[in-house]
Image 1 (cartoon, one colour):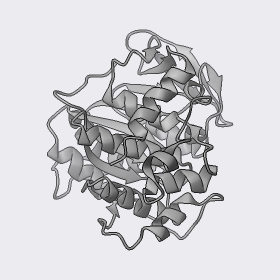
Image 2 (cartoon, helix red, strand yellow):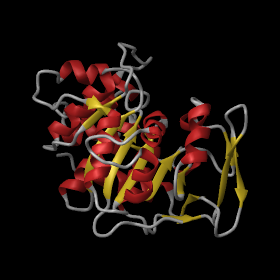
Image 3 (cartoon, rainbow, N blue to C red):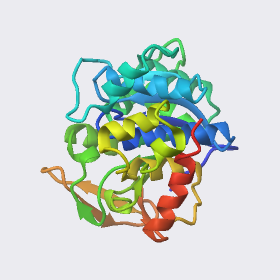
Length: 302
């Protein structure tokens, strides 16, 4: 299905940070995994247009001592979400030094161009607009390759939080259906899918304020979105974890098949053969054990 690159995974993380707080938790885990030498986090792209999302991502990266390039959506706005934790974080920690976000397409192309062939793991925990723009991109100063060839050469594995299996309707793939269909149609190589059902009842982040304190932007984000001590399901956290640990015993992987999208944004799983492009994760441990593993990484902080 997928061909992992040599050495530790080089992660390019695409996130809709601003729509749900588990994106911040996933970023925090990625930064901790990098600090411990498990992965290299080469770039973060934000695929929602609010300017608060990339600012918060940059603040979190800086808090963890990382200089990770942050990519913003091409059309940034002042939009806010109903429970706008990203604006809360960006305003509370805005005076801390952090790198200013660049346009996501620039960040993505530069990260892929600098990587060895087959070494990049693309992780998508949001929408697909930035990745579709990457596929459609022309050669530039970073690479003489067009976007599709750049992805084909550099990306060894792709892990996506999206869909519900064997069927359902999940936000990441349903909200921008044309973008989802374009991504599934055009993306080179196989895709490992982490569905809604995997961690809908796996709650993490309840203890962040106690463990990390409210000077930590991740703890502030969780409390702003969820309320004190509530926590949140762990969809994006598990996706990042499985990108870092592709052979983790926490899950098994389905036989190859295909996620098929319907016109109403719902999806279903179609069984396939060895040539089919997708597989999806099946949790193999109790919810409490999975939550404990993810919380362990989340609560380590910077």
